[in-house]
Image 1 (cartoon, rainbow, N blue to C red):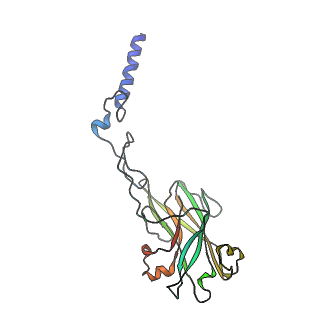
Image 2: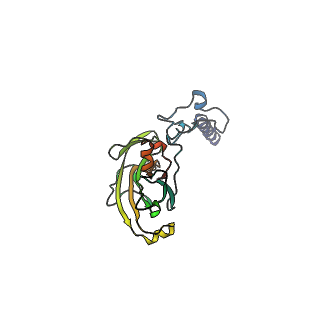
Image 3: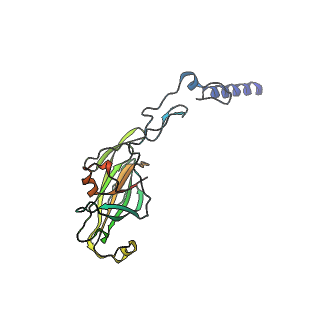
Length: 245
C-alpha cells in the first residue's frame, strides 16, 4: 500500500510539473511553449511590457512616455530660472524656484477620498528679486501642470490617464498660499539681492490619481519667453518642473 501511495503521489507531482507554464524542473515543455503565450489585454502599456497572464513572461518594453526631454528637479532644493525682462528682451533676471511639502495621502479636510485613488500634493514657490532692474524692468512667471506619460489634455482641471492599461479620470486642485508683490524680504539677501522690491508667489497643487500613479508634474515657466516664441510651450527653455513620482 505504501508503495502504491508513493507512486500515485509521484504521478500527481509529474502532472503538476508538466502543466505549469514555462519550462518545468523536469525540462519538459509547458503549455506556453507548445501553444504560445496568452498575452494580457492592454499590454504593453506605460507601466509594463507585453505580459503573459499564465506564466508572467514579458516581451519588449513598456510604452515610451510622450514627454521624454523634460527635466525634473528634486524637492527641497532651490533652483535658478532665467527670466526675460518684458520691456527689454535683451536683458534677463534670475528667479528662484523650489518645491516642498510633497506628500501622498488618501484624504484630508480639503480633499475627499475616492476608492482606488490617492492624493499627491506639493507646494511650489517662486521668488523674483530686484536684479530685474526695478522699476524699469519686470518679469512675468506662470505655473504649469502636466501629465508625463501621454501628455494628455486637461479639461476643467480633469484629465484621463492610462495606468496599467486602464483609464482613470484624475483631478487637480490648485490653492493660492501666498502672493507678495513689491515687498521687502531681508531673508532674500542670501540670493545676492538687496531684499527690496521682491515678488513671491506660493501655491499648492494636489492631484487625485490612481494609487501608485507617478505621472503628474507641476512647474513654473517664463511667460515672456512663451510670448516671444509664439506661445509655443515646447520651445520654452526657461522653466523648472517637479514630478510627483
